[in-house]
Amino acid sequence: MILKKLELGVFAANCFIVGDEETKEGMIIDPGADGNAILKSVKALELKIKMIVLTHSHVDHIGALAEVKEGTGAPLAIHEQEASSLRSQPFRMIMAPFSKRPPPADILLKDGDTLAVGKISFKVLHTPGHTPGGISLYTKGIVFTGDTLFNFGIGRADFPGSNYEQELESIAERLMTLPDNTVVCPGHGPDTTIGVERRGNPFLNGAM
Image (cartoon, rainbow, N blue to C red; front, side, top):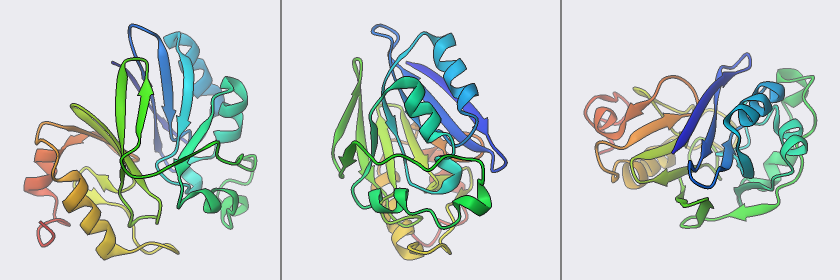
């Protein structure tokens, strides 16, 4: 698997470029800022982007969405419960005043869907709590968790639509059921593993 991580924007959000080494098909996860840097990385990796996927619709994860979609021509996928908030961004002009308005989704995802990038398949895990339509993307050995699970942390639950109890339930039932050696690629901060978080994440002690 080709995997490139870019930490972008004033919010230091992680954007991931994932590709199949054999077919050179790729996917971009959460183009949060600096579309030029993302597109340059795609070109350097010699990937044909087949899809742009959003783990959720918060402004720090979509700031370069319009630019990246225009530059790749790839369809945009987001969970069906997150699609309306993608187009309604009350904080965008304050938090990302120079970003273009995000385009509408082309593909509406639901729990259990499968996304293919070349010969790599990702399972869509609906992990609400940080946002109602938050998702994680899982393939054997790795999971992209957006802002649901971090290295010794979890996503904030004080935004409109957030639900702390639901977030803990999502983590316990959808993420902590994965193998311990599964690498966690979160929306902010360094990578971790499911096992490390199971044993040491202070937010999960009462939720497991």
